[in-house]
Length: 257
Image (cartoon, rainbow, N blue to C red; front, top):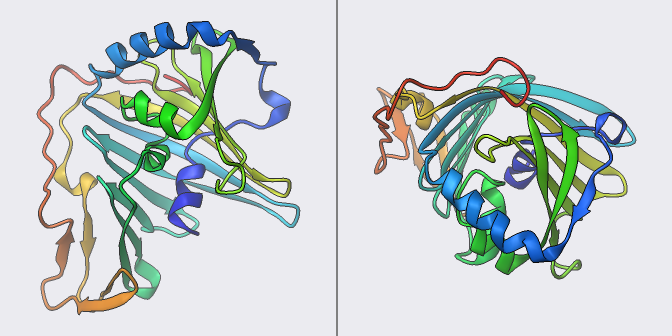
């Protein structure tokens, strides 16, 4: 599973259980994103759970795990099943992909351009980057009390995009995505539901990093650069994320809560 595919699986709903979405006039985009940025400015960290479906004509693969986001631009997806411990971490423009079953960590750098905003799939508050790189539109739905609005993203150049469309279904309270549906092509889509939101709570640093056991091979930009020695190693080394709680974390048990 590639990093982009894992992120595509952040949140989702199938066409059968999503209320028909009504498009919102483009004139309201500026007002919406002004409100979006204001609400997101108050979100400094997120700890949540997700379930995921990778759908193709051959099979439907179910998986689940945890997601941690820390402002600015630090996000971690850690899988419980089917591949327990598989972790995708992104900090800024650097990506870490860890596969514990083969003791391998791949590290690579993304291009520093607006298109990399999609890798944070609506968790960051940099809406300008999304609008610069993608055709963005709003839609409305009747999903009370969770959320009534969403964002659709399409590559401006369809030939260069890795997907056809991303739909972010947003909570009304903070515009965090509780579902995302990614249509890759006619034969591939990813669906995920995000639950158990804990916002602005104190995070255990281990949730924001990857712990590598002895013997793990580190491959950086396609070159083997290190084999982890005795005692193991924590990555990323230069960024131990510790978030002090701003308030008691806001909890939610159901989808979108």
